[in-house]
Length: 242
Image 1 (cartoon, rainbow, N blue to C red):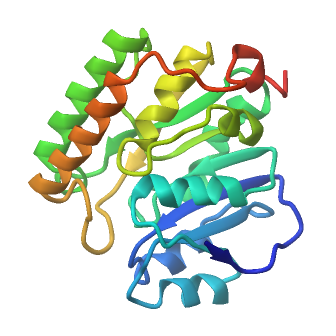
Image 2: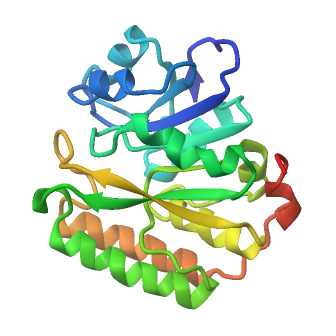
Image 3: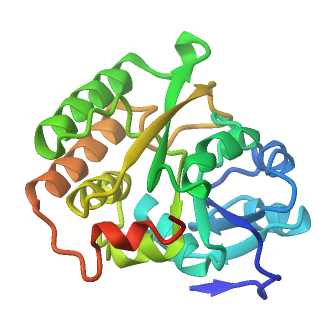
């Protein structure tokens, strides 16, 4: 993994996993809240994503190991802020809404906040992906007791607590493993509604039946490993701001 030189710490770091998102990046980076730092994790793009992100002022990390989890975790380990957000880099979610998602973490009322996607049009969320998400939400409730509606890619938590969860999945199961291990550690998990728009460019996962099936398979493997033992992952680890 290689990265550009570090800039001064920001109040919040925003991790943006990126694979060939040159078309969406200008809009996404323009919507990052003022004073927050964008960490674009280039996961092997063949377009000009990394150069565009760097030109627009983002901190660019190059993660050569392919996989959504690999990109997310590379961004997490590169972060320096107390609070870290994650957001897709395809313009389906508006980074300008991150303060609403991050607020409960900053004020200490929640340890992990997920953006519950609310489609703005039928094209935003293909039927097969929506059905898979519904089934996954039911499995999460059954396995963890968390009454979640969505395993949304927009989320926020404290950096040190996330690192203490010792997440190991480096594919599509990474977001689920984060939620499962947070639940095992007694974290307070909340949801906030966020508009979900049609993505810019081609989807690598939920846009195809094959990608959706691979994601579901990865997530089933995560659920099968419960209960997880994460070094240092206890209820107190998350509440550093309380």
